Length: 195
Image (cartoon, rainbow, N blue to C red; front, side, top):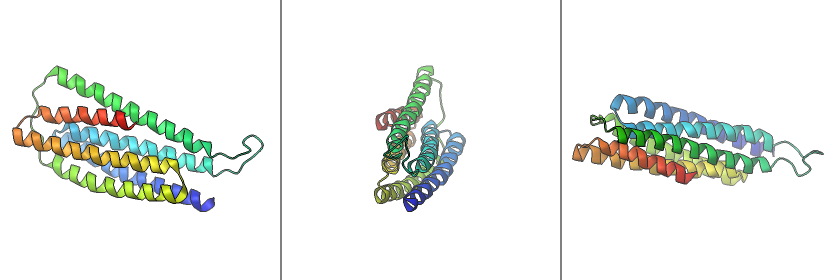
């Protein structure tokens, strides 16, 4: 049980560090490059940081031995944390959808993002694949539903970043910045679906 907790805690810290790096890079470069879709992808990664912190806290709760109040132990905390993660992911997606629809309705003329947006998106895809593989591997080894759910969420993030990359391609090819905003809206719908 002690080794299980250590592995879950270690996987949570790796996730927090990796997502923090990717989130800051995407949000900062998204603003600098002028890409709402990359900023949206960064906000999604920030949600992953919160998810990993919940996983970290839950790992400590789950490791407690059974007592008179909880004769079968604290394993249910894993399930409760998984539901909480789903709610957080849904909320982030809904907020993003609302702000993106608002931008589309405003119809403000936007500039085409810079190439930095493409570079950070490619880096994000590679980083998220690595994090998803690691979370899933440790989740299966420890039997942690939280880590496995976090790994699936990160694979969803790879799809999100791929969609952002496709949106950026169309934005550059067709010289239409609205594709970037539409891509941000699609990313928000995907986030809600994953939740």
